[in-house]
Length: 291
Ligand code: SF4
Image 1 (spheres, rainbow, N blue to C red):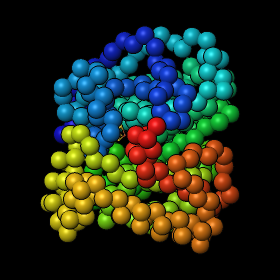
Image 2 (image 1 turned 120 degrees about the vertical axis):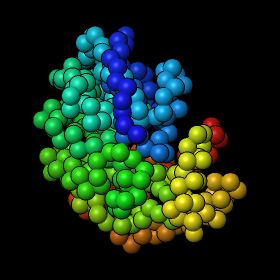
Image 3 (image 1 turned 135 degrees about the horizontal axis):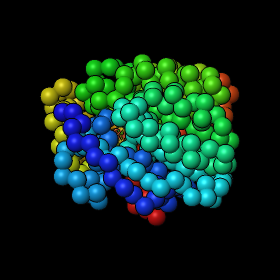
Image 4 (image 1 turned 90 degrees about the vertical axis):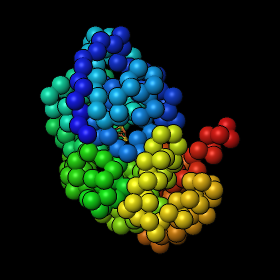
């Protein structure tokens, strides 16, 4: 499967008020995402954009009028890449994300970037001009085979190198260990790999809902048959013991290693080198439902 359908679309505004817990604005310079992760939560947005093609096979390249009054965003948090990766491989050609950063340059906006690419390194010069910047990468495995089974983004090694270089450039970095695949994601091994160049490590469990539940369950049956009973317990019988036990293990590990540990919180700030904040975001679904 490749991204074959590429169109340019005109949009009124590129800035959208966010409904995410982090607030601020959510900005997606593209519609669709060539990284085509099998577990992509964002694939639901196909419904709102009239796309019927398979997720990962289409990309709309947005064109917008230059952001008017960019200082309106002073002090506001702007999240780039919440439902599509602003650094998908076509960004090298179209430069939409860079254009947006150029338009916001000189403001006091807070920039948060979520990506699975190392193309963001191209824009470090520009990012350094903002007062508050965070770049986050999703890394839910150190196993390149599992990674390539799940997505078409760059290798884990390239993501880790990009994270390290961004950190060394003085920019705050976050590692999203997300989604955690039960029995597959080795959380502690990932923490050990990134601890010296991540300010915060976010731990989020795999939720299976919508169309991709069948895809993931079929994958587990084919590639990890010994995990089928565990996945059935978690995703069909809705049992939470696995997450409870992982939560205990990680909180004791954090205490042993001296990592600050938070639950369902998104603290801002730089961490002492080698001591990233660990954030457990396992039960957010229940928390949201309980609101
Ligand atoms: S990189 Fe993010 S938006 Fe793109 S397919 Fe993967 S999960 Fe979805």
